[in-house]
Image 1: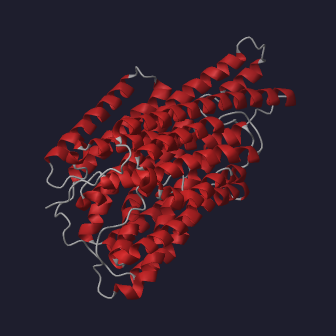
Image 2 (image 1 turned 90 degrees about the vertical axis):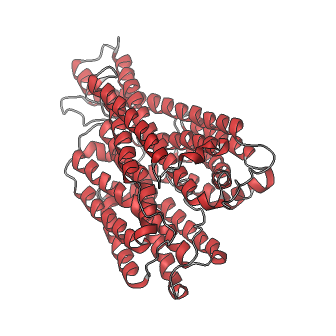
Image 3 (image 1 turned 120 degrees about the horizontal axis):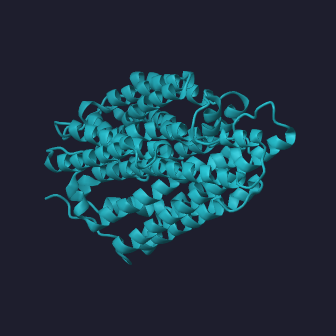
Length: 528
């Protein structure tokens, strides 16, 4: 969980027994492949945000397009993640892993070569499909190759290596953006995929789950994807077309109906990707509501924060990447400590205190300007809150369901986290653009600005970056335009961080209302 964008239940133990004869001889290769595969996805998730301002400027596009650069990936991954895990169990974990890595690498090449925002977004869609296949397979390969007594240590190595990669990614990615190009952060992925595929095909044996359901819930996957896509399209389009526009109303309505159809389909399916009976547990429903709110807040805040650092405060992309290091380091150092909180205090208080501290971290992030060193405290507070939250959250998810449903429960919780980020980026993007445009107008009202300055300021509308300055502007006029846009950006992002803080507090309230106190929540009875 050192990766800001990592999923909450990404490190749960896979409860499958080794199913490959002689797998002890290839355990090290399996572990290496799992690390390389998850690193592909984790690096990509954590580094793209730092590059967003540069991508928007280079492609001369809008904030809405940048929302889609993030959400196209998250949409496909969240809608297909459970299907990817089911396909791996049925058709073979190595096979699905190889397909996932291959798709991800090819799509990354498309991202790196994209000539415009539309091509980049399309490539990100395909990347999300690849991620939905490779992410569940990474841990499933470990679960199949390692005995239960060895699995904890193997997952610890996987977790530590992934944390190091995810922690270094924003800093390295920022440096590449500053000194090379944002395209390089995507073009690195095919280079990592080559040894990953080579080792997998030559050293990793195939494994399957003999008890896997015979069918895959394709209707559920299609309805989930279509519903989320329609809903997100309407939310993002509202920033440009307005909430009363027929296309926006129609898209949001269609999304709601499709998601309603998804719920009905899951209730009737023989092998649903999201078994609805799990939500009869008050604890399971409550902890997933907490996940939706908290990870939505985290995704929305980290989407906007690089714009504040790079565009408003003048940081380089590398410096913006370095701003995330305190978060990564504190999370890494406190991960083991956080894991023991449930045994000492139960889940209730960590799931109240952790999100509350996270909310404080969001508020501190948006308070005032300052040098890079001034970010250490806010990021550390934010990381402390998440470190207190993550392990109790995962434990609560696992304990709220019967032992034989823990894999499904963790998959649902991961999908909920992704959907939270997906929806909040869409909603906050629309809110932010409206606030940003209004702030620009307030600065111009009664300012006696020249027509050239007014035109230059208006050129920033719809985007979230400082646009190129016309050659006709004087140095003083350029400074004034930059000051107006930077101040509007700062005000807007600060508001978004406060909204994120409110959502984090709401997640703490959901824990207070739904998570039992004192004792750790008892595991639901196992299947007879």
